[in-house]
Length: 260
Image (cartoon, rainbow, N blue to C red; front, side, top):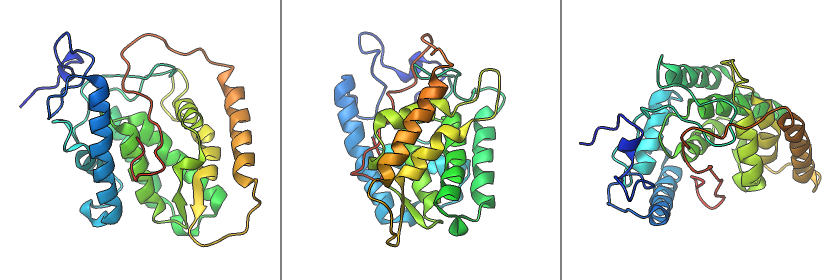
């Protein structure tokens, strides 16, 4: 069993040190990306068809179980917390530190919000605010070396099952999703997440299960408002350009339970 205790230990030795070690021995990054997408999509469809495959406890065990199920065919460390600190290019602060139990603290907050919210009674606006708070904490925890986006979206689908809404990720572009996710991280020197940038995203992707009367331009109007808010916030920051890159930006995949 491989020990993953350094940044390099997740990767193959040179000249293949741009590729994560994987269960099938793929050394080409693009080939691994294709294999990973195919296998996690298949597993995501299984989870969607049979939700009972994972117990919905909305805690750290729930999050880890999703990741383990999705990536069981790809990585030895599927379902295990990352052991290294990391951030994506463009983020202003790192994700949760592996020291001091920060990952679990954010996941505990996620669990608290989910289990103390009466999801079935929420209207669209209330749902969007609550979902934004849940996702912002889960995203900041970023528990895994790879696959956090796909895991988070399955988790959010599980949360949404308790409400009047489903989530249609095709209603928001990858660019808008990634920008809103990035801006939801804590301000410099702070611990608490700032989920406001995600509220219009969830307003856009929340679809009521029963037919509802809405203006045809509802989604486009929400997205214009979101881009305006993001643009205002973005002006006040300068992105980090150094440090290890955690993973490729998560991009929603409307065709699967688990966006790629």
